[in-house]
Length: 223
Image (cartoon, rainbow, N blue to C red; front, side, top):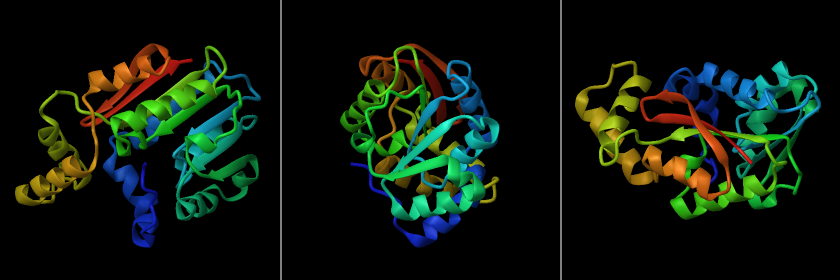
C-alpha cells in the first residue's frame, strides 16, 4: 500500500519542489486537462487520484469551471495543502482522504492519476488501474503520468538524469548517483512497456503515450 506523505517538511516543500523535479510540469497538467476535456462533457464528473497538494486540481478547476472534481489522497496533510492551494476554487472540489477502494462507484466522465503510480508495486498498481476502470463510464479517458523507465535494465542510469535535472546540474556526480540509487531502491519503477501492458490488463484500450521527460512518462487510455 502506498504510504501517504506525513513528513511536515516534505509537505511544506511539495508545491515549490515538484515543478522543479518534473520536466514541463505545468504543461503536463495542461495536457492532462485537454485530453480529459476532449471526451468529457462541460458538466463532467472528474476523479483525480493522488490529488494531495492540489496542483492539478487547481489547473483543472481554473480551465473547466463546469467540471465537478473529486480529489482523493491518503494523506490528510497533503489534502490540507490542497485546500490552501485551491483557495476560493475549493468550493468546487470535493476532497476525500483514502485510496482507490474508498472512491464512490461513479461513474466518472474522466480520471487523472499524476505522479502517483510509481509509489505502487506491480500488483497494487494493477488493482488501482482496474478500480479506476470500474469507476469510469464506457469510453471515458484516464490520464496517468509517473516515473517509468524508457530502457529496461537501465533504470538507475535514467534516474541519474532525472536527479540531475531536478538539481539544475549543481549536484556533483557522487550525490546524483547516490540519490538515484536511493530512488531505484525505494520506488517500484517499471519499464515503460510494462506500464502500457498494465493499462491494457486493467481493461483500458486505445493507449497512447502523450508525454515523456527523462524517467517521467504519461499515457492516455480509455475505459
